[in-house]
Length: 180
Image 1 (cartoon, helix red, strand yellow):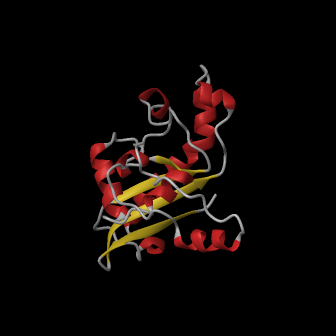
Image 2 (cartoon, rainbow, N blue to C red; image 1 turned 45 degrees about the horizontal axis):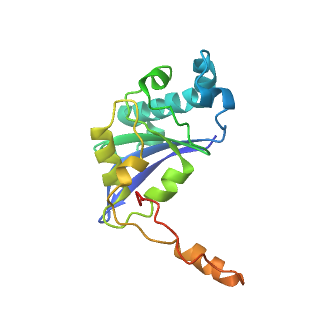
Image 3 (cartoon, rainbow, N blue to C red; image 1 turned 60 degrees about the vertical axis):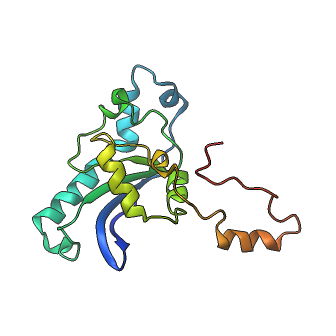
């Protein structure tokens, strides 16, 4: 599906090159249960995304003309964004069936990414770089790295949209990073 580099920016200067692959395929019931033949299904749904991120990172490093506008002097991370959570994907038994990558690449559900961009006390680039350093070489749970960070309690755009409806917002909406 869609792919492309995005430079994460902190204080006006890019500090990270983030390569994103978006996959709309949902984990099947069989994959969620972890059957003996899960490797084929997991690779079919996510393997190409990991390989594409690795290819893009190599082209950036080689300074191919199409990628010259992307900095090659800062950390490069990948992110496979999925529509639903692949709950076991970072367990060694599951992650080991995906292609090896030279780029740290978590598999992240869209909900995790939505939560990550609400953090207000640090930048997304910092969260991802710290997660890559602390996580396994293959990947890690981005949501786990959000614990303890201050977040925007509500998306102001959604808050305005909900205000239009007569039933409005619920009285209390928990933060995405609340542990309670």
